[in-house]
Length: 366
Image 1 (cartoon, rainbow, N blue to C red):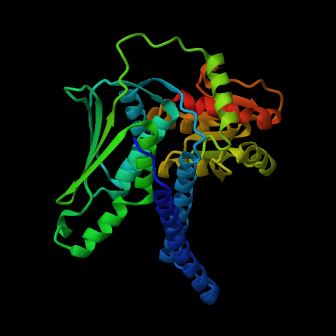
Image 2 (cartoon, rainbow, N blue to C red):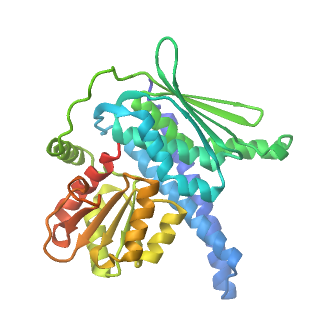
Image 3 (cartoon, rainbow, N blue to C red):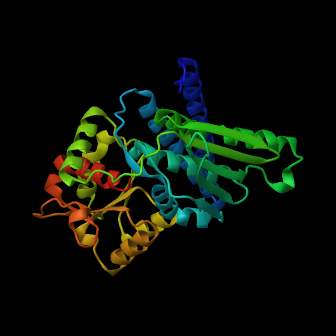
């Protein structure tokens, strides 16, 4: 499958600039009003926050697109249960879909393919980002096999225009702009990098995207899992890519400012989007609006509310990555070696071990 030409990448960069500049201009207008009047109402505060969030999201998409464009990706093709991974993504994002009032309808056959797990996981999340941002209806997902030649086929169908506005010409142009956003660019380029064919059709306000996977896995047992080998593989990938987790979102929970700074410094080179909260209540509110990819929390925050938060998140996303930080002596433990599924690390080992630990924990979900 052909890669984007320099002209196409130039168009993507231009679009990135526009999607960052637009929200920041709106935010600047709100800030100028605040500076002039000395006050801001709830609506203005809501608009300001939305503008900043939109610009931040565009920057996050730009990071991920930059990683695809670098040409330094090392694809590690392994047997992947596409059905199970898709269900895991949908479970992790169930809070978000419920908050948006969007019903996701599934018809998924059991399918296994050969693919890079991290990139495949990114593709499925990019698909949901794009669909949820544009749908005016339910999102219908169907995974099946074509008769001949046999391929795995994932289709996503939704109404990109409100039924009440089908005759509105202005709405038609606005809908088209949303469908061709940076979120679509990321979805398209991730698919191309994986060797997946993205076919998009639009008719009468309905969008149908079909992703075709050629590399089906044969009906044979997968190779045995080896934790040591997986850690070595993730360390090698970390060394070969300067920003291996670009676009992944990490939430740090700690009331200790110095501990938060140490944790942020340890992952700064990884290109992650990092958010910080100081209490379990703030973390709970953050996760309610949308789950990050991992939660790194201070052991001093362990309490009944924290245990409840862990239980709630694991119910929605069983493979979610939790990492507990200890201020004193503690050996580094993977989640696969603990009884509660929470990885653990000592503060003194953050700089050396946290990047590899996060690489393993996030790869484990794939």
